[in-house]
Length: 247
Ligand SMILES: NC(=O)c1ccc[n+]([C@@H]2O[C@H](COP(=O)([O-])OP(=O)(O)OC[C@H]3O[C@@H](n4cnc5c(N)ncnc54)[C@H](OP(=O)(O)O)[C@@H]3O)[C@@H](O)[C@H]2O)c1
Image (cartoon, rainbow, N blue to C red):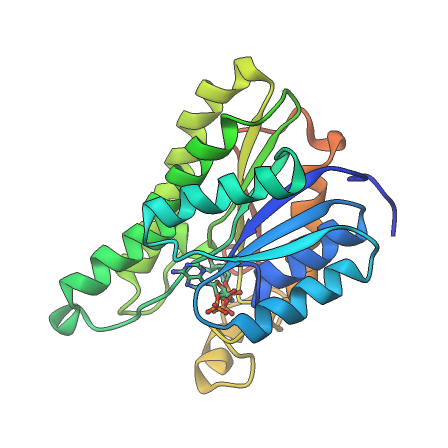
C-alpha cells in the first residue's frame, strides 16, 4: 500500500465495525495515525485499533455516542490531545431505522437526525478549529439520498440527503481555509447494518447494475483518495459509489 497519508492524524466516527473499520484500516495502511469512536462494542473497537497498530501507526478508540454532542466534541479533543492535531475527519457513524410510516416513532426520527446529521455538523465544527490548510472532512452518506426504492426508509433517506446540502454549504465556509469537505454515498455494503445474505439483499441486488454488494474496502479506497493531496480540488461534492444502484 502506498503512504499518501504518512503522519496525518485522522478521526473516524463509528470506526469500530463495518465501513468505518475498513476506513480506519485503510487510513492506517496509508500511514495515518488514527482515532476511532464507537458506542456499544469495545471489543470490536479494540480489534480495529490493533489492526491499525499493526501498520506501525498510533491508534486509539474513544467511546462517544454520536447522539451526544458533548461526547462528540470530547472525542475530537481527545484525538487532538493524543495525536497532536487533526488533519482528517471521517464522519462514518450512522444508524438506519426502517419502519412503515404509520408506525414510525418520533424518537427514532430524532435519534436518526442526531446521529446521522447533527453529529456530523458538531464533529466538523469541533475538528476544523484544529485543522491546518490541507485538512479533509469526509462524510459517509448513502445512495439512498438519491434513490429510495422501498417503503419505510424515508427518514434514513432524509438524513443522508441532508448531508448533500451540508457539504455544499460548508465547502463555502471551509474553502478559504484550504479545507475540503465531501460526501461519499455508498450503495449496499456487506456489514452488520446490511448483511449481503438477507432476503432484503436479494431484492436490492436486482436493482443494481453490478449484481453484488460492495465491500467496506471499496468504500475506504474512495475515502483514502479524498483524504489525500490528490483530491485537493474536490470539495462540496457527493460522490456515489454504489455498483450502479442509482444508474
Ligand atoms: N452498509 C450499507 O449498506 C451502507 C450503505 C450506505 C451507507 N451506509 C452508511 O455507512 C455508515 C456505516 O455503516 P455500516 O454499514 O458500517 O454500519 P454498522 O455495520 O452498523 O457499523 C456502525 C458503526 O458505527 C458505530 N455507531 C453506531 N451508532 C453510533 C453512535 N450513536 N455513536 C457512535 N458510533 C456509533 C458502531 O459502533 P458500535 O460497534 O459500538 O456499535 C459501528 O462502529 C453509516 O453512516 C451508514 O448509514 C451504509
